[in-house]
Image (cartoon, rainbow, N blue to C red; front, side):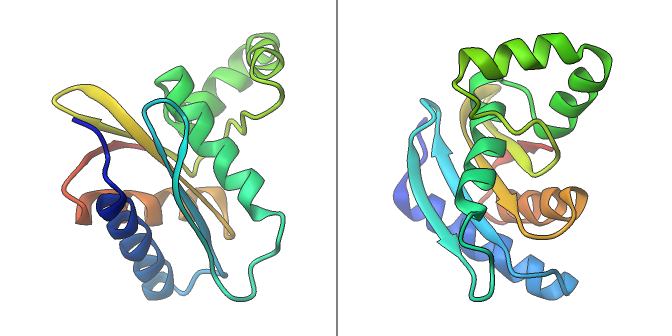
Amino acid sequence: MTLSLDQARTLIAATRNKGREMGLKPLSVVVLDAGGHVLAFEREDGAAPGRFAIAQGKAYGAVMLGMAGRAQMARAEAQAYFMAAVNGVYGGQVVPVPGGVLLRQNGAVIGAIGVTGDSSDNDADAALAGAHAAGLDAEA
């Protein structure tokens, strides 16, 4: 199973809807495929222009490590040297905080969604809602 562009658009729309429902600050949302390639991205009006790199970094870390943002943050807190080394390997592209949500189907990683704009925990909650709306298994 691979993610389609239509699924990516559904993920983004549902994530943005949840963000508005929760009263979050303007969000930026990216969906990556299992190879870490961008399928789709949207930045809401009023979101800072640099948010793409943060959203992408959250999702990229999740898909490349097979580890969601909350698990990455826990790993960074427990073994900072490991996450620093990982970030070196991936050219500084990993942002190990909540908001990078791993997407699975039948146990296999099929991609990730990265959300930024509000608190990291709120970003993750919005992303989870998006994943569930798209009918995908997700780990925050």
